[in-house]
Length: 438
Image (tube, rainbow, N blue to C red; front, side):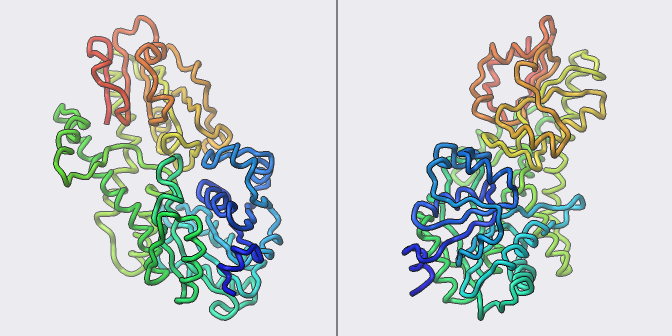
């Protein structure tokens, strides 16, 4: 009997190593059909899940309360599973080189608890070769087992989009790969239980790894082009959003828009690819150029705000500036690698200490990662300028009166930066507002 059949018959269990924004939805999806052991090294996170609280907001508290996932922070529980999915972050270091510490640590923990006949599938975004050249030796060293004889490996890149309620695990095509045909068949059959839109069988693990890393690199480059266009059009006195709306009437114009590019995917993955390219003797030109543009957008926005304050005769030093939205993307509590912090830091260089508020953000995480205490929204008042930095639904739904309330009464000019262009420009007449968007 195949491992897939044993999983379906609940004779064997599946483990999910890493219960974050990617791992939790996967574990939840599988738990509807098979036995799932959800493992995470964070005891705090595990206790939240056990108490019915979803800190990621990806599944929701109600679903967590009724899920059959067996939550644990005890590594020994991994011995109870035969099919393992590793979904841990793959960030970059300060010098933009890959930080493989999380995936290496997960491999060590899993290796110490790996049993014969297991299949290990990695979902973490990596450069081609990491699964077979880095992870497999760790698994072998820690387990004393031999890959290809005692256990098999595969790779299935995560495609879950945090905060996106449309493109979910069940609605997107899932790339799967395995070290051999037998493993590929098993991996494909297992994922077909939850990937209802179907699976795509990649020819090799390296092909699957490469496919994932270029998906986000492509988006990064296209957004960088939009950001560069925005900088050009501002100099020309042209509204970028209006230009894109006009250009978008052509059937093959790609619908990208300018913005801050943070998070642990688009803002990180290109560096994994360029790192491997450097190892092979090739220096990336287009990919790194796009990264430089996107990495500098926070500085550009802050500098633009300072110029608008000066134009409005508002003293720059100690100007009262409010920032609404701090997460790396809309409707998601994740603040890791948010580029809004770049705006904050740059404004501080000008003697401005902005009041930052985000009703969606993980407040504890923001303070832990950046030393930043997020304020309640009612404290954003008497402002000289307001930056709406993230397109959260609750921010996009604000009316003119709510936005007016953020500013100091008697201001001759209200400086409003609508980074993502979520408001109707016509609602902010130039006699009262200096309205600016990318």
